[in-house]
Image 1 (cartoon, rainbow, N blue to C red):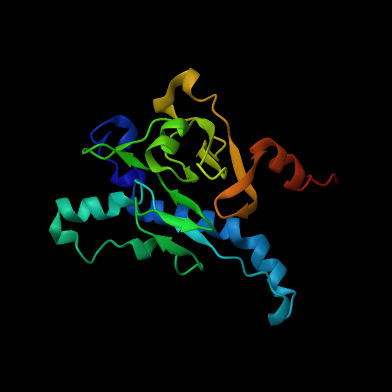
Image 2: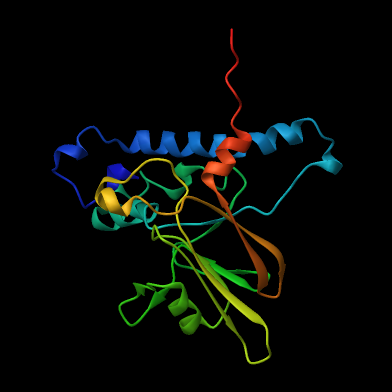
Length: 214
C-alpha cells in the first residue's frame, strides 16, 4: 500500500503511486501464491482436495487503508479492506494487532509492550512479556528464543524475518542482509514445536521451473 504511505508524501519517490496499482499488485501476488494449490485441487475430487486452514494476520501496511479513512472521512465507503481480496481468496482474516492462538502458539503481525503499545524488540523479550510460544513478523531480522514453563513445556518465540527478493531503500546497504525465507512449525502440540527455517534461496532452487532451451 505504498500509495497510502505518509512517510514520503511529497518526495520524488512518491510520484506515480496509485491505490489501484497497489490493489492490483496484491491480487496478482495472491493468485501466484495460491495457484499451485488451486491447480492441484482442480485435478482432484471434492473428497481428496487439499483444504488447509488459511489464516492472514493483517499488518500495518494494510492498516493504512483504515488510517486514511479516519484522517479523511469523505473517503469512507470508497476504500475498503475487501479491495485486497483476502477473504475472497479463502483466507481467515485477523485484524491488525489482534493475536490469534493456533494449537497453543500465538500469532500477530507484531506484539506490543508498554502503555504506548510499541512493538516488542526481541524474541527473548517476547517470551518474557507474553509467557507463551509466539510468532511475529514486522521487523526484518530473524531471531529465535527458547524458554521453559514451570511444568517443563518448552516455549519458543520467533521473529520471522522477511520473504521478499528485493532490497528496501530505507534499510540501507547493511540493513538488507537479513534472513529471507519461511518457517515451518513442525509437530505442534500445545505450544511446543520444532523450528524449521526454509530459506528463500532453497525454495527458488527447488521450485523454479528451468528455462527450456530451443
